[in-house]
Image (spheres, rainbow, N blue to C red):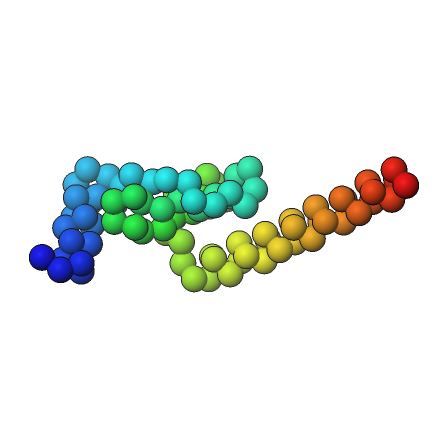
Length: 85
Ligand SMILES: [Zn+2]
């Protein structure tokens, strides 16, 4: 059995018994990426809190959100430093 066949079997198992999602990335409190430890498929939470498959488009949008958050945090950090000094 080669790797592609194993992946297909795992996917079939997931279809039958459900995916085993693990948290792989937390962008915000409500925006998270999960990956199935069995078949490796990736999902994310939508605005309603439901799990949807993580498309390349969503990945890009989330990357944008993440960048904004990181920049904001960096700015907050700077202002705190200035306030102390
Ligand atoms: Zn799965």
